[in-house]
Image 1 (cartoon, rainbow, N blue to C red):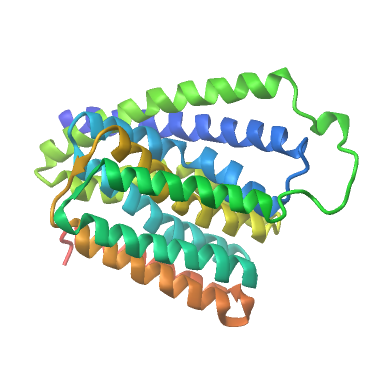
Image 2: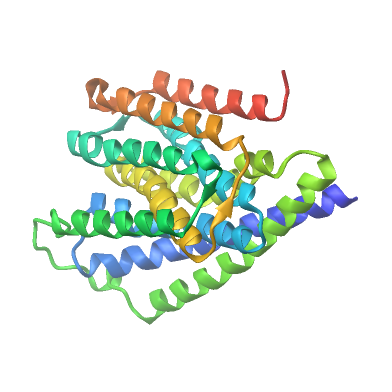
Length: 311
């Protein structure tokens, strides 16, 4: 009975996070179009920020409740889920086209950022100084993205129905309220489920919580794949991973330093390897095909099986 209640709390939290994040993405994208932002820029910034809000709420909530393992494992697990399951599914739907800019600038930045965080957590604690550095890096990165050509090169009139109105701003505020409530339910359900099942909080955070907070990225990217918007798709996934590490983790540790377990190191090494593999796949022919997608999904499922000691 306890497990059913815990799963119910997780499911309800995930639904609220999903709907809230989708509302944030839709309204933020409509507002951004009025400033004539490119699809890649919207994907790397506005959409990535919106779809990463669940991770932010869950991580901050877990941090202030002294659940450091859930706080960090949620971020690492979400980043692996983004580049493994989500990118893999999208590649199965249709080959995902890449670009040298995305690989050499944003992809490489994510790889270096992940390596830097791996070094930061070697003493099993991430403090305020590290948080300040990460937030500063996040702010500088986003400023750079906007200054390097955020504006659309073609000056077109935006149709009246595409312009942001009062409804978009209302959806934006409502979305933030929903993810706040959803994040609270997710943390409660995750902590209770870990205790009921007799497994560590790190495993629950890396798997169930990470998958739940990644639902917005999954929905947004599948829609983008079906519409052939590869730039927004890849921009959202890489931008979300950057936001999770630099923005979410940085701001969380700046507000309240977190202490973590030794399990963090092998998980970070796994993520570092996956990012490197994705970059190699993206560079091969400047696209990620169905075979590469299957490999990424298989690797992610294998990691879940190892986490739950299936074999």
